[in-house]
Length: 230
Image (tube, rainbow, N blue to C red; front, top):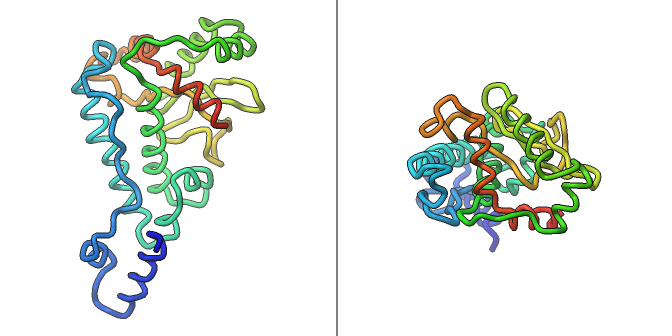
């Protein structure tokens, strides 16, 4: 029996009773639909570019908060049984709470994987695409840095694929280019979190320094895998 069928049967079984959905879930040990992914490296692995304390707080507090709030926001709705990617793609149909927290969960899950303790460079294939669409890696990084630095308040900057070409954009808050409400739509292959909680302990108000340091920990192998998965 699938999780969806089990939970559906469970809910039918408690209809008309005085047992709440949350109590029934707890009694039958039904897991929440969304959970915090483990990091593929230690909290201290990205030092000196991102410090261990920032990584621990960012992952175990901020990201966990998005997961917890998303589970609360979808309980009792069809989205409780909907894959995260599908929720994000149709976010215009969701509440503000779902939009903020589904975006936060998707964005952070993506972000952790495109970071690496190991210094890397783009492959020849990816470099050829970067040169084709931006002129050089330096020019791409300059445009990306500008998008990340100029994003007012909290948000993200992205390297995306749109119509088989690489482009750069930014989004506010926890939005991303996969959302049907995005001003610029595309498939992200690289992104950076420019919320203050991502860098303030080490860099204070110097967002540009954090963005510059980011290039030392990009997991270019994962970036190319994101490209191949399209």
